[in-house]
Length: 301
Image 1: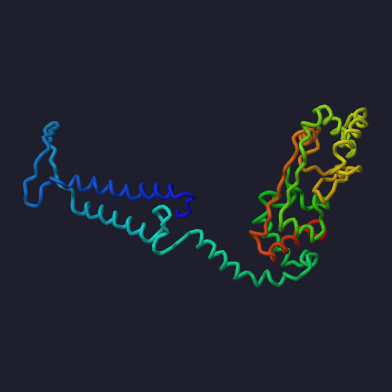
Image 2: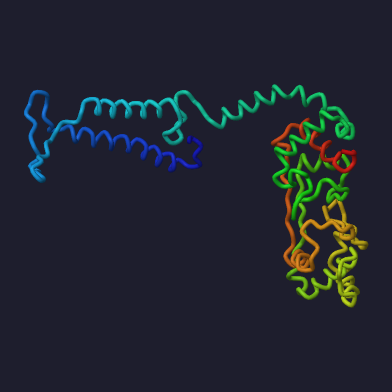
């Protein structure tokens, strides 16, 4: 509640909170004013319905006391805890700090478990039963949302169980990918070519994978491919892992292999990013995770 970006919002919230209590107290005391005191006759309001007279009966003391006590509790709470804009309260409590402290406490408890794998080669981690179990749990908690619980991915999220890698599948390359993340960008060509030309390239690329294609359009497509695509995907269309440019001959498609999908990618480009995990996981956890991922395609499960 105290994490405001401007003083104005802090003042606004404080005004609403204190003003609400002040208004309630005003309403209470305005109703107490003029009421009959103990021993005095209770007057009526002059309103009579169907023979029933409405009297100006004083508010019950227990109700007034409860109202005042609750107002005092509200004010006391705001003095002790965050609630009045940017004022942190006398106890300086902060839910975010408490959560972080609990996380650090838990991490300190489990750190010895991770520490014994800190210097173990990733290839050995992939073969260690206990390490694989920990790595799988880390994957399910942090990576399955995108890559799936079976690590076989989905459109725009790579399959991690095969030997096809956009940025390299060596243990240290996987470690680097998890630690710092990756961002793969394919330039949009809508200002460089027509959809018909993109379709020609799609026919050529599909022919490289023995997919259905128009043979008469393959040669024109290759000419256009050599003009626009070889810089990233290479003359042999086998990609470049330094750029994250995929191999276009291996039959693995991140977004799909239909002509329509390929043409869309050429014309509009692609921008795909994997977030870095270095601020979420410890180096030891990342190492265990890298070992499990590498083992999916290199160690018999």
